Length: 441
Image (cartoon, rainbow, N blue to C red; front, top):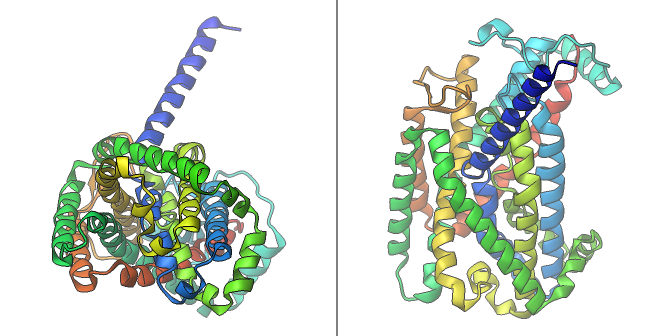
């Protein structure tokens, strides 16, 4: 064996691992901000409606169990394990799946030549693939009923529109939820001041976008890592100090018990539960900015365990302080670290908005490539990662719409209701498209 060849192989592997870890680090500042900032409002939104009548230990532990299994089944199992593997030349998102269908199975109304990039898909490697019974049935159905292709395109456009709608609601919800924490210490402060502060932060966030994903990722990543460290440590502290028994809520039995106790009021609270996966779709939509392996490493090693600990600690605190359900996150913070955590939470809310903003750039670029969106200027901000882009017109339109939502609603509960509806639908759309991408020609 040639020792020089072995040296080159080791060097290339080290270079690959270094690049992957670097992308994983950047992904904290772009992909996971929204998902990681959801503890700011999940319990508050869940118990803001009819579930207020069921503020007992069984309901609190049931909500924790629902949050845990939602995080496990959708971001971890669905996205990390399955959906991330359905990339189109490294690009993710609903339109990336549709582009695959147009080229691989000829199921779309758009042909492969409509796309600006006719490169061979990462999926279309030329290797034979075993066609499943389900995919065979679906292919025959689409071949027989041409109108079903129109429905498929409308479904894709609906999913894409929801991602863009999420890009409008996410920044308003995250930033306003964080800034509202100041009213815990200053309850007499008028809401106009918190709305104004949130608006200034949003303008600053969108003004940073032209620096590109790499620069924004490096700038925001330390903030999010500090945030995840804070909420996980506080979660461990609250769990041990207030109620270690909440660990048992990880059992799915508590989900059953929750619906048994809360009845239809429990079902109506699902909009708040679903908020725990805000930004999960960004893991797929932002795939073009990073890589599959970097996103998987960052989520499974750091993001997922930190979020579970944070929700567990908050539930432990609430089990002993049920009167604080409407201010649960900030009330669960120990007094000695309140202000440092508040500052980090506000900064993390800015980071949280970044995930869906970058995802919106990606999906609109894909729509444009398939001639489903007006021509806009797409600025490539990286010489190494093709998917790292910035679209000026979309950026400023998103900013105006976010400010309109902020000023129009002023209340996180009302934004949360719209938010939960969009997220619930978004969690279903990629599953259907993912099955179709496994159909052979």
